[in-house]
Length: 192
Figure 1 (spheres, one colour):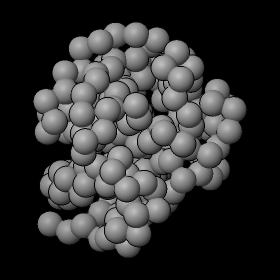
Figure 2: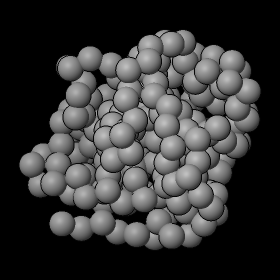
Figure 3: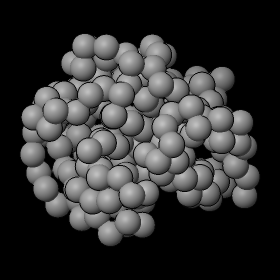
């Protein structure tokens, strides 16, 4: 089995914010593949199913972004899942909206959810799909306020298209691995 983990913050206050794009992708995959996200375990909401012919567990940690590793490490340990079989989806302020980047490992790059996962999973060699949400505006733009804010109407339309492409990236990762998915999707620029 493989894990697809969407990072975000629980609760309606954070719904549809930039920081919750990982949750949105997990929700989209669940809907597209008929997977019910109804199981509550290890500080997460989960659902099991088949995507692209692969057994998968979709995971939405409910610990808030900065403690995402608590849920993911507990599930991975109990299920016997190696880091290389855990795809983590998160926002990235260093990528513009319409872009995504898939890598097999790497640093947290300032993303606090990834930072906690690297510590709790005891390594940075797990695949991650970063979805661009753009940088805060130069004039007084504070990163925390930016990632916890909702998309503009134009960016929301774009992000809906990005989520469709990101679902394709996750499905290709499941079937053919990180390199194939990265080669196909890292250069893609999604437009409306």
